[in-house]
Length: 434
Image (cartoon, rainbow, N blue to C red; front, side, top):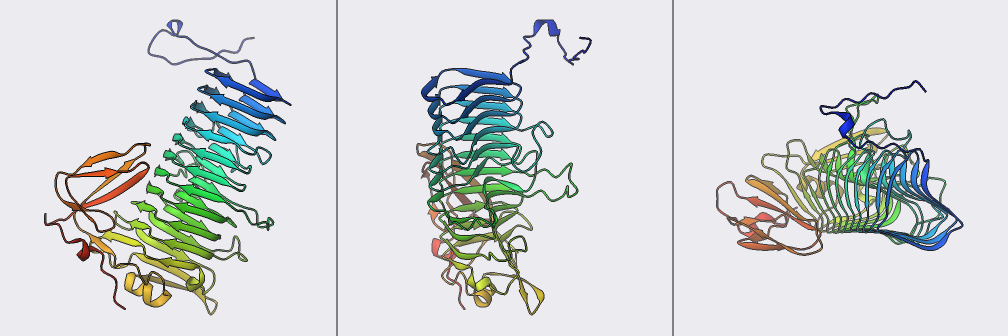
């Protein structure tokens, strides 16, 4: 062979340890069952490091998966797969794929990083550049630390799915139009899903990358994105911050409960949308309560809702939330609807939102943020203490002083009044008068 590989280096390559793989897969298991792999390193494959098919009860504990040209682990029609306490890193395309025939899977306590982080190294299409793809029923994905993903961190389908206590940071760094946690369902699939929960996750820094596309300025990166026809999902206790497009994006969805979440400093904190992608599936039976929507940048909407009908008042229950926006922001809620064959645009404040659309009637008036804002989060399983050098108020209007405890997988947004005086809690969130 006459081919040569050239390496740029500031040191002598002869002093380096250089490895190259000649294997497509390191582990192939067909019709395989009741095996456990512990403390093993799977490193270097031209395709997938571990491939399971038509098997059952296979576990990987305290293992290391690194350097795959395609995927770290693929499970096809294999039940009871467990990946726990392991490292998955430096994978060109997908970290873990669990297909529809892979049920009762557990992905827990793993460090997952640098997945499809280099544009062009993964496969084409929407189902590439993921950290985890899970399509089977009865899946648990919890307590994983996922950092630096080219596209979507966790994509899920199926019933009885729990996504809990995951810390997701730096995602959508190579592609656009996705999220940290994402799901979607074909319009032809009329079977309602059930038992899907997205609980107590912390999601930070969704970027979105438009280069290489015809819409390079459309850097859509959401924290949680429930896409066309998604249904029956409970979204609770999550923190989403610093995402370029939206903290939460509900797109042509039904039967969604969103409660007790914090959306902070995103392009828009929450977006509800019904469009022509699924004209027969409007936003319905949405319960959106007790959430914090905190805008901390010029031009950040607190809430945006857009539909192709005159039906904003019919989407469900939107009430008892906490809205905050920078001082001087007069219109922080935007609504788009279609009435008499014409698009109607409304930019308004809390009072106008309440009067025109009858939502958030019990929601307290929006806080106008004037002082310095401090955002803290706890992405661990033990409480931590936050030291406050001066009195401040949190996102719900509660006065905080001294030492405050931050519970596992929770967050707080603290505001220091510009005057140095702490307003009374009751002055911060007064019910709006109609």
